Image (cartoon, rainbow, N blue to C red; front, side, top):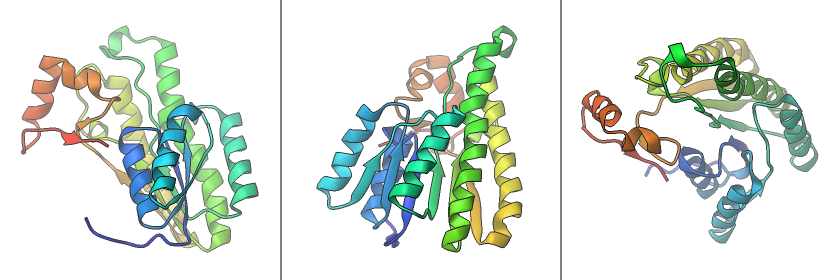
Length: 222
């Protein structure tokens, strides 16, 4: 693995209790970052915090539903009061509550998916960028998905939100560049995590997905 230093950097990682978010948190801490981990439930976060601390790293857990504006406000109050600055934001938290064709989707599924996958990252970036500007700059990574450019069956709403996140990344990248804040998007393909379990276990969807992957296999999450 390529080594890089995040010494003296404060990193905020959403959806950090498992899967890709956990892997990003562990790697960030291994490379010296002070990590603030967040997800809806504190229990899963504490396990990741213990892994980081037992390896000699620095980590703190704070529960936050990134689909709720009041939770985001409380999270950044915590960051401001306990760290005073922020250098890295990883918008990894996402949801996909509806698995089915778009014609059968209801408003509740649409709203929940958009709240967490689009509205949350938008306002997380707003808060984070203000702290980063005071620190002289920073880096933001939005974890989108290959679905954002290549939608797959039964995941229409999720794919739409991930496409929106890619567009949001481009817009923020242009707007924040002058403040020395870089904004990029990560587009993972099919990754073996609890989040994607239903896709891997549904034979016809898995076969459809694997056909579009040159190596003919999924990635492995943490």
